[in-house]
Length: 168
Image (cartoon, rainbow, N blue to C red):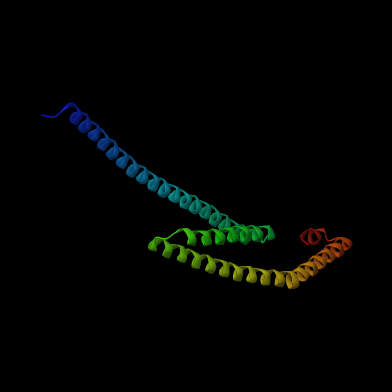
């Protein structure tokens, strides 16, 4: 039989032991929650970065299509801005992604962007070359043809041949 003092000491010891066990479990749980929260934040940042990269890639593609349709310098500037942002985002991605499979995907994406930019540069060069040919050769030829048709129409009108004048 235990004395009252022994019973109190045993009860106090059990209460302290239970409190320490709860504190240990609580500390461990807090660590797990913190790790999960950090993981969630990291994945959220990556998802945001991927979303931004997706938007910039779409902007780049739309700018290329716009340039192909209009040959407008604004589309080239828009492409350049989007490609620059995308390259910066890829660099940031390389620093944050450590999963080997994703690292390979980012490297492939970087390579594809470089190839896309190089190929688009070649397309711009060919379009500029074509435009200079058109401006240098076709423009004067069209102006001369317009002059000749105007002259034919004027002389036909002067000769009273309205049918030829209307055709010119």
